[in-house]
Length: 480
Image (cartoon, rainbow, N blue to C red; front, side, top):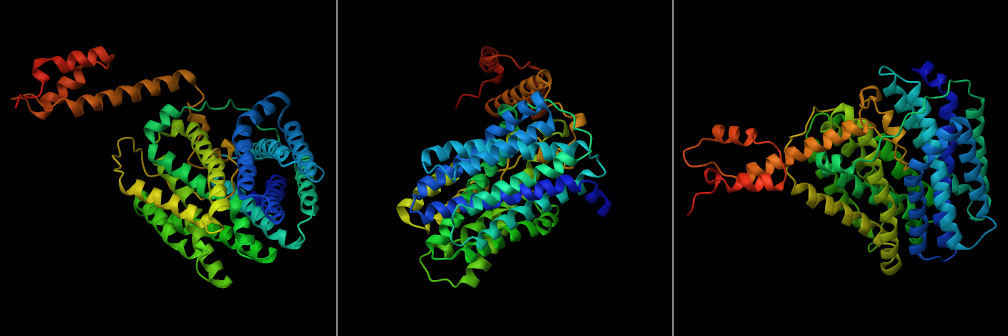
């Protein structure tokens, strides 16, 4: 295990520095803007711009890699991040900052995508799980260290931005020095929402809402802390405790999810999240140690929604479609992460700091109602796949889920347009058959088995064919 970690040490070191810079950068921006009396709406918009860049960069970054190769693309992306970060030390126009944030998001996700692709290409079915675990540990550790390091800069001047630029430069060194073979450039799987909205609609909605919750946390939790009167040391502790609790509890949550119904577990999770955030609304006096205890529980609950939903989705998708599934789920999650801070920022601007956790409660409550009203048919269930812990940072590069040991690119058909069209047509035919079976009652004197034979014998045609079937006197409902 140690030898496996050491063999990828250069890439893990780059991931550590990159995540450290990301954690410090996002925390600093939220605190700096709040200290300078910038509206929470603008804070939310700036964070949403960053997440928008992450989503867009998952596509544009791949084109850059195809054009110039992995190492050059990584160097270009790192240079762009450093330039955009340092530009914020000399430009104070907040509208321009929106542009900077989008570009930084696009460049950072390109860096993550390259590192993840390298790890994925150098792994096989026997080592992918361990490599993925080390990736998650280093990524989460860097994020926590970045958030905690804000306590070193209580004055919140431009020094943290310089440190972020240094971290970006440092993450270049191990990649430039690596002697590993360049990873193969794979074609990107097209985004086929029409396939996965039919196969895993529940998982997609859960991930969208999880994105709203998690994106809001990373964007506005520092604002919440400063509005409550916490100093930079306390805010750093507040953020670190929440994230570390979410990271560490993924393994016990995974053990539990492999033994109980995952939908029920997600339902219990979001219901508890609805309740445990109530004392954090800011309407009651809560001591700081109790706040840390509560946010630790919140971290456990909010950061395990994502991996639980991913596991549930994989249970209902054939292995040959899971690369495409990864891209779609991360896209949906990223859209939620971009939308959540905008809505929550507006609410905080109108209703105060407490609206931060009121928004989280509302999202969790919506999920609770949604899950309680859903019935899982199990029609497309393949088999229960093992739970896999996931990184708690938001950087939706599809390559990270390809490191998931449940995903095997060698058998995947997601990038094959012709085969994906066949899948879509089959799903449409299945839906049409279901509608027929739902609206056509058994004819008098005809048992269920006979009726099923009649229905299955009919080809899946167009709407006119359906009308002809329904007009058949033998298949009409008996008159009252």
